[in-house]
Amino acid sequence: TGSTRAERLLKAVQKNARRGDPQSVISAIDHYCRHSEWAMNVGDEKGSILDSVLSEVSPSCALELGTYCGYSTVRIARLLPPGATFVTVEFNPKYAKVARQVIEFAGLQDKVKLIEGASGDLIPKMKELFGNVTFDFVFLDHWKDRYVLDTKLLEDCGLLRKGSVLLADNVICPGTPEYLAYVRNNPRYKSTYYKSHLEYTKVEDGLEKSVFMG
Ligand SMILES: Cn1cnc(CNC(=O)c2cc(-c3ccc(F)cc3)cc(O)c2O)c1
Ligand SMILES: [Mg+2]
Image: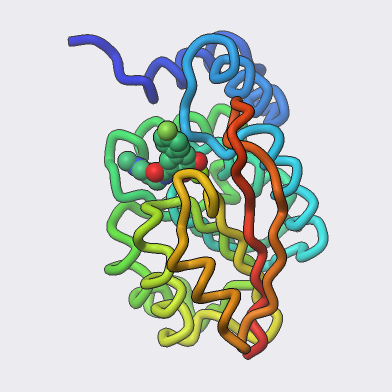
């Protein structure tokens, strides 16, 4: 049978990027998705905002919900300080398989712990899996109807600390209205909206940064 979109994206990385060079992997994916076949990576425009928020936070412990093909995983892992713990969660085994190869092609496999499963099942297991961690930075980019549930789960499982930064993709398109309402009306969060565009398009989208006040 034919390849999937994710497998074609991986082929484009293997063909056009340089092994061990994260920036070339990022550029190869952006070029392919802009000129050949759209895919739901955070993309270069929102990716630059992600980079700047990451550089501000410089997390020693980071979590990503929704690995997909590993594009934002590579963007995040390439900017982490040495020795940082970075966990990324993907539900779909086919995406996880592609992401592992993209992350490995970039040479970042030693910085990333990719775990397969449902965020709702794995979040309560984080302390058991990684020791008594709290996350300094969380990138939400998975199923949009899971953002609120999983944020509450992170709070209830003691995985956030005073100053933890949540950065959420797609708060306009496809949209996460409940999540925006939750973080913007909740005194325990200080939220900022970064206006941008849906990856590789002119459609409005944006990232919401929310600092947990403990
Ligand atoms: C199946 N699945 C596995 N992971 C997920 C979670 N991600 C998304 O759903 C997602 C969707 C879109 C998007 C899709 C169609 C459209 F017309 C406009 C936007 C963009 C994104 O950046 C996303 O992160 C879904
Ligand atoms: Mg997204």
